[in-house]
Length: 430
Image (cartoon, rainbow, N blue to C red):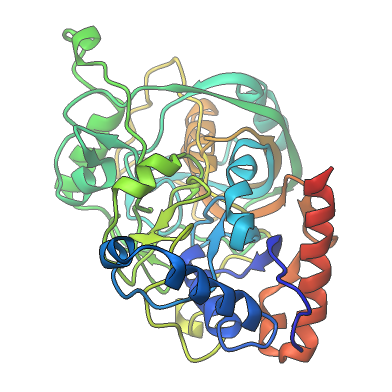
């Protein structure tokens, strides 16, 4: 079905588990580029490029014409839920979706800590969790509501001395300075369900961190206290997403995930060759580069997959229930010292877990919340599942398309997509 006019704007898809946000864009590009629906858009883009000066064409090179796509805040590959997509001029409006509040459902599993603060990392230590119950968690959550200060995790795309933090971790090096806390807001955090040990399927990771990896992770939390004022530095925003995933395995760095915002000027000044891997920044700027991919204002330069893929092979899928998933986030750092927990500490084989619902500001790391909550209740905690249920005006079950819809043929998806884009255009013009 050929669109009678150029239809651009913003819509949302429900990202399945195990796909990176960049891969979703590549999958959509494969469907959109040969479609009748976007034929006129591509034709006019070719004409526009031919109309520019010869010098400008030489500067840009012979880039192929793809449908202009971008997303309004990356979701970690292990996460599911609302992924906002900008098409054409709609990419210019994506920044507003980074700045708005988001709602997540996240499952925190107690009794263990990992280097990535989630179940994709390596176990650093374990701690008792048999003393935990719903009331203790509810009491501890009071400290994390409202305006708080939180420290981004080491496995994030924030930069220090021009180098992403995850690269220091991957190389087994200490960050050169303290990773500063920064202000975020949790407008609400509620317990949706308490899962006592033995009554859920969430599991700690099987892989243990090496002694060197444990030392690096420990230094992120307990830094030397001499002249910290002189060491302080603001973390620079990053364009790349830190984590690479093999199935659902984090390849030492990932976003949010949820936390790095970048500007159009930054994007224009930095361009890299795409890596087939993806990452974790819970949130990156709308017109961003995902895994080295410049989404806004340029074509997607990687070869798209043969078909819309909605999940990785069965072997790569987490045992965690798929119904409970959202996006990565930040955490509040406890004022009390981090409890010393040794590998020999008595632990419960079937630890409890809690399903949380939260509405948070831009820059909030859910992974860090899970980590810090575990410490606050005298145990440890990791994020086991994450789902973004709402972002801006887009909400699961209301106005979000399923990614698998685009595998059902243009006659099926085009009318739905057109209606969504026209609705956005009407709202945007008001």
